[in-house]
Length: 116
Image (cartoon, rainbow, N blue to C red; front, side):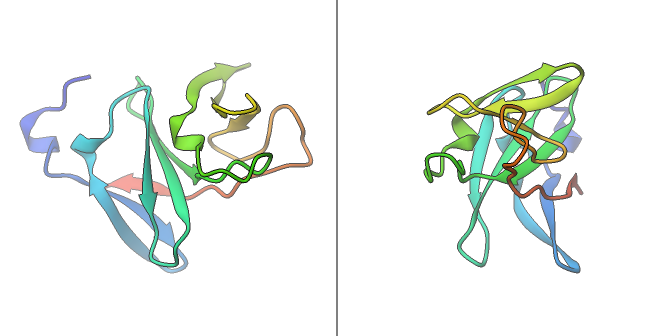
């Protein structure tokens, strides 16, 4: 996906509590790949842009290994649900709800994301 020149100035923002936090330029995101970003409180978030142009943001920490690696995972779909597979232990996390598709008792945080 090639971004039009007017979209390169757009900023990716996450909703944190009652305000929006600017993370990066939209041009930093590549469809099909993740990007890690540091939040003001020290947590890391994994940002994804799918090939249809939808953005997702989840916690970057893999709850099974404890490593901050979800941004390096592969994205795909399972029964219409977008997911990222952890690069370490391969568990899949729903990008919209944060639920682990392989162990429904495990979740990661999700964030509302927009380009503005």
